[in-house]
Amino acid sequence: MPEDTPVRPSPARRDRPVAVSARSRELLALAERVAAADVTVMLTGESGVGKEIFARFIHARSARAAGPFVAINCAAIPEPMLEATLFGHEKGAFTGATEARAGKFELACAGTLLLDEVTEMALGLQAKLLRVLQEREVERLGAPRSRAVDVRVIATSNRNLREAVAEGRLREDLYYRLNVFPLQVPPLRERAEDVVPLARELLARHASEDEVPLLTEAACRHLRGYRWPGNVRELENVVQRALILQRHGEIDVDALQLDDAAELGGGQPTRTPGADLEASLRASEGELILEALRAEAGRRKAAAERLGISPRTLRYKLARLREQGVALP
Image 1: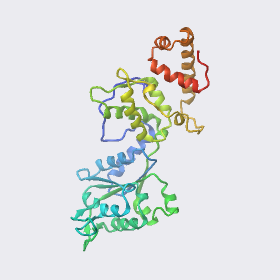
Image 2 (image 1 turned 180 degrees about the vertical axis):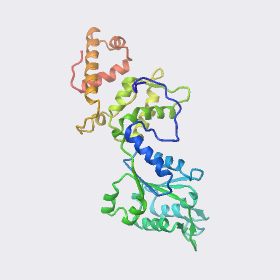
Image 3 (image 1 turned 60 degrees about the vertical axis):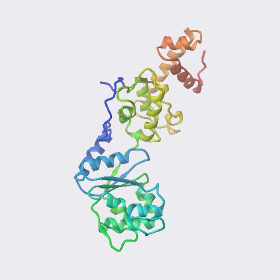
Image 4 (image 1 turned 90 degrees about the horizontal axis):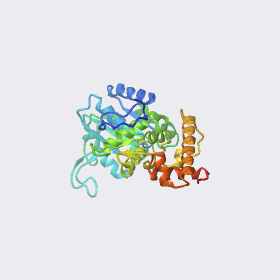
């Protein structure tokens, strides 16, 4: 079945990333192989590409799958709190420590600890993290002795790691300790074949199980032609908006509410496979709209009926034509 054919998505599968493009399939196969080896993994890629999804996939396919998967965003927690959160603390270790608490390393024992955006961690704390990774033991704040931990670490970053080392953001010794097996998740614009399957999975995830709307062929083309600067996170936002704007169980172009600047490539004159065909289709669509308007003496509602689209969809397309400088009847 061609990808553009409207189909009703099946319930979303959360056990593995969507991998339709050749590049995504290669990455997924590599992730499955590294999952079997109990080594530290470094996932890099732009914000919103789905690094945590791949981390969870690696955990689920590993010998530690029965153990906990614990994630912590190193960029979201202030340094003093991050240290206590990672390593734990004893009662009275600092003001407000009214009871002893285990840190994330202890909570992740026999499982996997995800250090999200690890390059945002302060250098002093990076040194303490390095020691934990080397010695496989953690010392709670205020504790008299260390505790052994059995944890697999997966780290992520949206930065270029070598540049982060050169800029002094990442300790070089920690870089080598974390970068045992590097995996780079490509941005969504470089795996266009994944976009529509991802959108369908997200629709199935966010819609009522018996009310999942269909993507029209035009909507599928529109999704693939967009550059997705916000990657999968942006696609999920678009899907949730489209669920609100969909009509009669279908999601058409007007329900997607995409950013025109990004759709045009943000000023970047890059070409993607099928770009010439897409431009040709748009030009043909514009001619059909103009012909319908002329035939109906400029009456928008009648032109929409002639074209077999909703008046709202026609308004959206007319706005696009007007922005391109096309004179409308």
